[in-house]
Image (cartoon, rainbow, N blue to C red; front, side, top):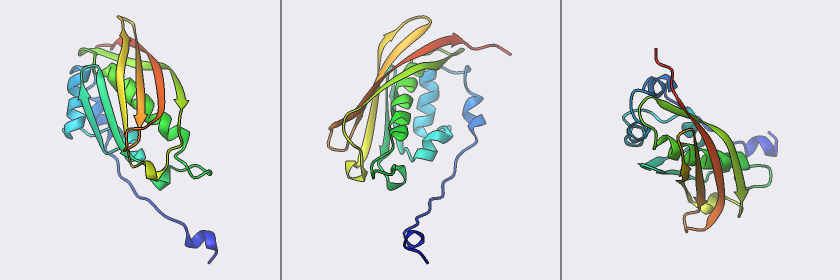
Length: 170
C-alpha cells in the first residue's frame, strides 16, 4: 500500500429530495420558507448538505449560515477552497434577498463580487456567514455577506445583485 493510499480518507453524506422545498416556492413568503428550513420542517438544499452546513438563522433582511471548516473543504494549498467560501457568501446573500420576498416572487443572482481576506483552515473553527440587505427595489436587490471565523475575525466578504421576478402561475 502506498503512502497516499494509507492517508486516504472517505466521506459519506446524504441529501434530501430538493423537490420538497421547491414545491413550496411561490406558495409562501421567502421568510416563511427559510424559517421552515431553519427549523427542519423542510430540508435544506442539497448544496448545504454537500458542504456540511450545520445551521441557519433567519430574520427578514438578515440570514446567517453556519458551517465548521473541515479538511474535506481543502484545496492543494491546505486551506479551505475559495469555491466553498464563495458558496457560503452566495448562500447568505441570496437567502437574505429571499427573506424579503412575498409569496409568488423569486430571485436569481446576477453577480457575486467576492474578496478573500484571510486563509480559512480547520483552525478557523465554526464559520459564521452573515448576510444583509444593502438595497432592495422592485426588480433588483443588492445584498452583502461577511464570513467570520469562530473568534470573530473577518475572513471574506461579498456583494451580490439579485434580479427579483414574479413566478409564473400554473
